[in-house]
Length: 380
Ligand SMILES: *Cc1c(COP(=O)(O)O)cnc(C)c1O
Image (cartoon, rainbow, N blue to C red; front, side, top):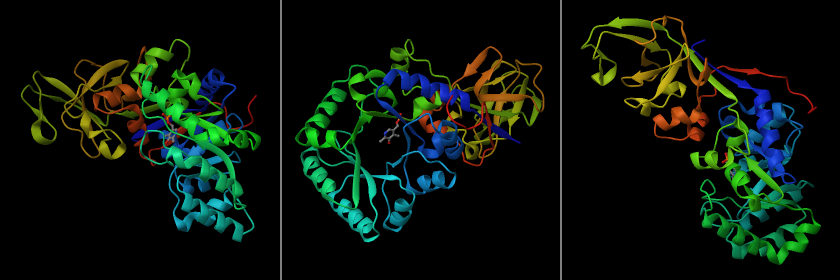
């Protein structure tokens, strides 16, 4: 095995329990798009079954995968639905996101023709300028959806664009726009038990007013902070623990003389007699190529060792000169704890000029994932 991801189910559950406790009475939906942020879609959802109010995915096929794995929780598809997926979506009883009145009518007709109904959540764009109805159009669209026998309105939501920042006026403005858009139909929505939601992880931590009926927490579920600011502001009241460890091993070590260059482009030249460790993974395995020439490090026998040279497609290099015990087969930790030191996804991401979100979302699905912690089952 050239590299391995280890995911601790109990750590996932602990993160959920603590953030859920913080946001209660708002409910907690775990966002498991992008292969559960690289943690494994099915295994992550199964580990959290019975402990969350539902799961958010991006695509219909992810919802179908969860249903085929026996996941019975409410599901919400956040992204677009292809006409060819309408049947699957209906079958797997996943709620769909609506941001277009004519698509709502299409869905309604499709379901009515089959004597069924789509659960739906209406998305309102309050300022991300991505998906969502204009606030001014929302109330009329909601009334039409409530009147459509092929649709079952379960929720209305918006997404916040600047909630990783502290005291962001923009976030408060977005919440005000959301509330104003729904004001004409408030009583109807309340009577129908329609959930209102706005907060992803950052807003769930930092903006109590955004918690509403439900939070959609992705990154925090996995124990990764949405941003350094959220960490600074919330880590006193919320403990997040990374659930994922990424390890590999030195496939060989070799001693090189001063002046020897290492890797493509000769971007690294040994300034001293050096010991180079070769790793059997590169950018095809999810190690960002942007780590080339960065101050990125890995852990080896509890010590930090720098990446050197360029990250190749399937290989990469560490300078292990200062760890004399390093040898072929030595374990290397890219994310996780080794001895007294630990590297977070954000540390590796920062060295590569990106964020923890991107790093874990791009971990290839075919790296072996090992799950530890108590097996899936009902919450205690
Ligand atoms: C991805 C996503 C989330 C989760 O965001 P995190 O910052 O990972 O918690 C919530 N809502 C929507 C609409 C999303 O696309």
